Image 1 (cartoon, rainbow, N blue to C red):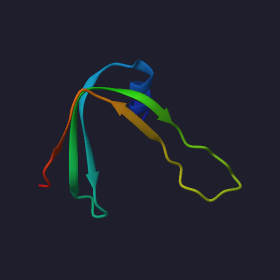
Image 2: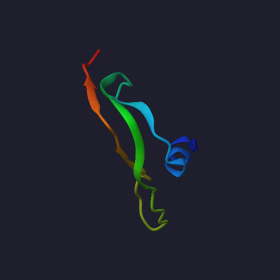
Image 3: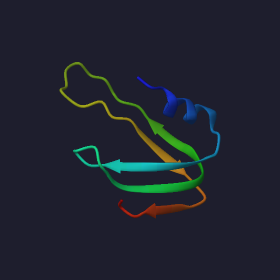
Length: 72
């Protein structure tokens, strides 16, 4: 229910950010930091009452640099 990601897509503002992957226990597994990123593409879920699927949204981030941080 949080519209932050969609609002960022609509604004087109460049930001520095971090993407964190967590495991099934909720523990950080890996992370990536990007510089001057902006949302280049966003795709929302396709709702179909006749299907039993998880609603997913994806975002493609264009950036000026990406660095993977080691697992902690």
